[in-house]
Length: 288
Image 1 (cartoon, rainbow, N blue to C red):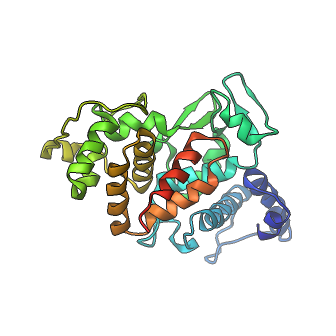
Image 2 (cartoon, rainbow, N blue to C red):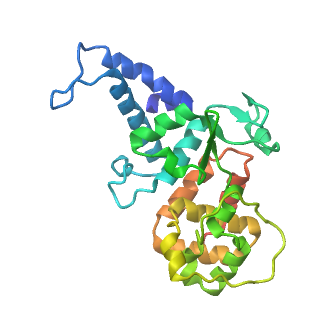
């Protein structure tokens, strides 16, 4: 992987380029066995190759030690962060964009993503191959960070996650709560199951207080590190600087994972995407 990367090979091209050398090793022997003497077939061997590539990629782009990638260390990020990072890393070298009229090669990546309708998508089999060996169960994240249709997996834009993260009250109401009660920052996320929002990025609504009862806390999903990064990006988009600072301060007190993931995503999101612009702007607001 290091040699191929030094030659400018990236993402999906790098993954597939690693298969050839791995097959060369496998073909040297009449039989490949585990330490216990069980024979290893080619499909199992190739799955291990994908796992090694995925581990190495995550250690590079997210700064996670390889031993922590499978969640064996407390510092490991959740599956949705690892899936998003691997998705973006794999997408990096595909040089294609789906604008709703089918995929085509991209010569100017930034210009392509500034076009209306451009989106991040990969073939399902590619996503499955990078996720499965690392124990990432794709159905768990369907309609939460990905959507699959006709064999293509799309990484959801953060604008489509706003209602999912903030509930029907929206980012403005949650921002009001963050400004009034910074210590309760994390209670504002995932107030109720929801999907497919429209992100309001201009203007300010009349302030409303968001009340979260015990029953709501028991039934809702727990916010992951990726959820909190996306929430901060949405607050950046809505222009709520004070609420954003409150959330960032809370995350700095929580630990290093938030900033580590945000920095990784800022390098992984393609140039020209709204996500890259927002995460870079959000990182500029992090207290020094």
